[in-house]
Structures are given as C-alpha cells and as structure tokens.
Length: 210
Image 1 (cartoon, helix red, strand yellow):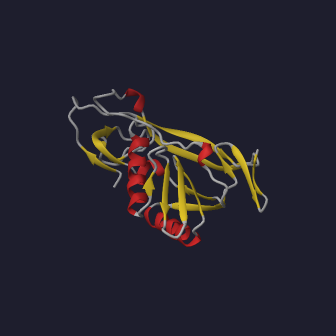
Image 2 (cartoon, one colour):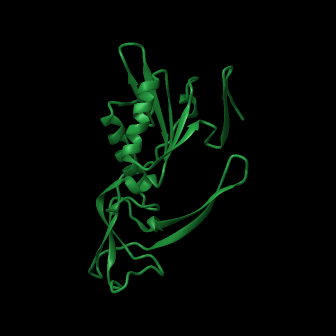
Image 3 (cartoon, one colour):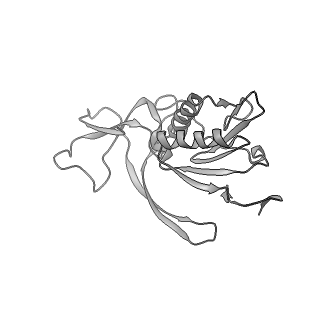
C-alpha cells in the first residue's frame, strides 16, 4: 500500500502535490509515449526535520564491460521505496475522494518529488538484489556483482530505474532477470541500445557508441 487516507490535525505538516506531464522520446527521435506523474512538492521539505541524507544512485559509464549487455527497465521504480519518516500529503487537485474532503494521504511508500525518494528506492532495490547473493561494490554503489569458483561472473549496473546486466554466466543472468521480474514490474528491453543519452551498437566486432 502506497498511501492511506487519514484525518490530520491542522498543526501537523502536510505537503501539496501536482501532476507533471512529459513526453518520452525514443532513440530515433519519435514519440515513445506520453507520461503523467503525481509529484509531491518536496521543495517545501526541511533537511533534518522532514528527511536526512539524500542521493540518487547513478552509474559511472566506465563501469560497463565488453560483454553482451542486457537492459531492463523498472516501471515506477520510485514508488517501491519504503519511507522511514511520517509523511502526509494533501489529496491531488481534482481527485478528492467522495466523502473524504477533510482527509489527507499518509504515505507509506516513496513518491516522486520527495527528497528521500531516490534513497528509499535504492535501499529497496539494493536489499532485493543482495538477497539474490549479489554483492554491492564498495568502489561504486551502483554496481552489484556475483563471482563463482568456476570463473563465471555476473555484473549489474543500476541508473535510477534503468538496469544493465552483463557477464559470462548466461544461466545466472537469466535467473537474475526472472528474480527481478518477480519483485518489480520489469520490462526486458533486450540488448542495450540506448543508455544515458548514448546510442550503443553491439556486434561480434565489439561495441560502438555514438
């Protein structure tokens, strides 16, 4: 459950929200899809009172190795994070539930716009991946890896909701994909073609980026 409706004293802080509309563009510059997100007005949050340390996990492009690269996309990734803080939000404009005009939304999961949402999402993702016996790199926290005693290895790189998996253990890679499908609404995008604004072309001769 992401939210629950509650009555709230006027003295208790709550946050506004708004809808954000966006156009997702495909690598060939055509319109991929139209998106709308409900976003909390996190810019009104106060550090030390409403949230602690924050970060958004991103990967270093130099981390990607010269192996076949598989790409996954996790839908609504931010909404999977668990909140430690007690956060209340006003009901979305024009979407006030019938008979609940005096109530507010108590957030149990992270929401777009909150300062702590990227950290909460990565904490959830990191826990799930490490339960698959992947190890988080100390040098780059966006990288997880698994090595076997037979020279087989699998690497996973996460950039917010974009996932890249590579390695020389095809069985383990397939198992990892299925594991992620079971925990998150995940789309398999096949071989990596587009990442961080860079077009990637894979062939037997190697990998070309442009």
